[in-house]
Length: 421
Image 1 (cartoon, one colour):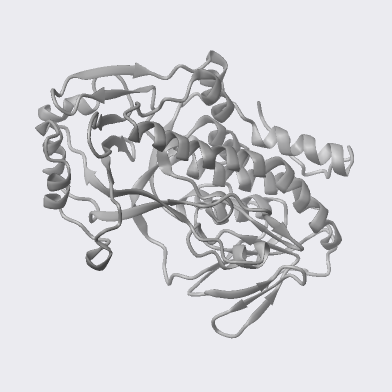
Image 2: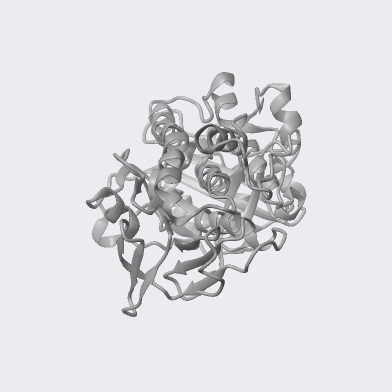
């Protein structure tokens, strides 16, 4: 790894996984002057067919890291429109959020269509460049000694290891927790794709009245729900179709699907949504089976910690998966400023777990409760004003900085930047 490893205030950091959590954490640590390597198993990172929500709590972190929300090419969400799947009639619902949240966020909720590497590339270039190593699959980790083993046979030592290697098969999680932790299948799968979104009269129902998602949800029978909303400055349209799937077709399961598969699954829904399926495709249609990670006994061990889905993979029904990953990264950046010594790492990781684990688990369990509510006939987005405030008004940067001051002294390093609130 490049850089002056003899400098006692600069850490050598290994980030395993090049998704939102890993890249954002790498950016936060780079800005503090640390030398960071990202180990990504895939040979290349390209755009994927999914949009993600960037809620006010995540925007606070991105602002702190120097990422302009204008560069995210987001589309504001001010509420949503619920469409009766039988009659096609619409009901407008505005977000019941307090004024201070709206004022702080400015863009209430944005959706972006992104390849995994876009977030840090939009940030201001500060600190030593991050080394991104593609095709570097991590096969083992020694948290106590700070080493990871690669499929090439190389052993890499670091002062800090961050496991951002996803929810399903996290190598770092297995070594941190001490045993394999498998995702629990939710009983729900979904179609996901993105369409080109030209202006057409028959599609005005997707943007008129209020900016936000359009939702069709079954009232009786097996759970089925369509979620449709613009992204990428309104030039693309994100499409998700959730449905009950008891996993009876395992032998015939394919991750790829067609327009006809969607139509067959959503028979009986008002044909209004069919005009969306006629749009030019921007990505292929994929099928995902949705799972949730059990609550873990610990996120840390020795010099290693889990971030993002590796720590708290949740279902998408609160729209907070990416936000939690970004919050984790923001907290890590605050707790490991320039001047952090290798011997400080274990205690800093304890602080990280103390301020992040309960919140990550709140979203994890809340997403399961939301699905249970919808499968019993309840509405999408049932969370009340108090719950929304708990999600959206949370300030990760302020919380982490206060924790740093209380535990590690009030004399902050010179480059320790306070949140701009």
